[in-house]
Length: 247
Image 1 (cartoon, helix red, strand yellow):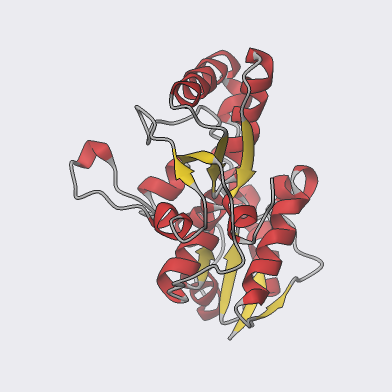
Image 2 (cartoon, helix red, strand yellow; image 1 turned 90 degrees about the vertical axis):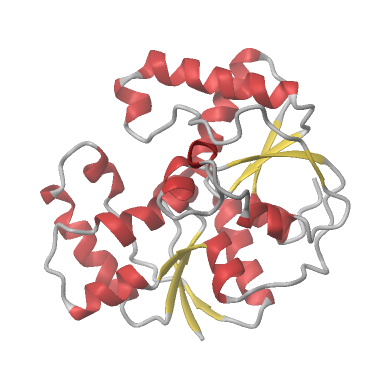
């Protein structure tokens, strides 16, 4: 199986350790993983602001970079959702269809494609709260949604349960948006900040030491809110925990 690794812009700039952990984790399972060095953005910022046509060149480059791989894996649910559901500024060629259908968020790739049943190298003896990005939750269906009143399930928690020593801190409102929303946090700064503060408050009440997610973007926003609130919380991407991080 040949895998192309896509590292989102904000991971590359602010959380490179997440991209490194993702690569190492995939290689632990014997996969041939490549990182196309001229990759850039998936086009999500343009689409989020209503500038769909302006994303065309970015989408074309993304397809050229990744069309040769069996799977494209990224540590970001929002970027996966962009490629899978919103890559519409360019013609729907066979290459585009292939890339869109074969792009997976890391957790769903491990859970649904590889069907991983153990992380023998991973130990994380801490109390952890889980955050699910809105796109990852509602479009990729990585976990159940309370508003649908459906049978509970969680792919991230199913994987984390295989990590030795981990303890879960349950949030009161586990699938509520944290307020990041990409460009939403720029154009609606006040609302975004208040939503982030509410999320951090819920995390503190849960007794969590750490907050983890499959999306660094949400955690970047939450961590910023937590620091300004003086909250004693740490944030870590799920790839790092599954790869055996010793925090």
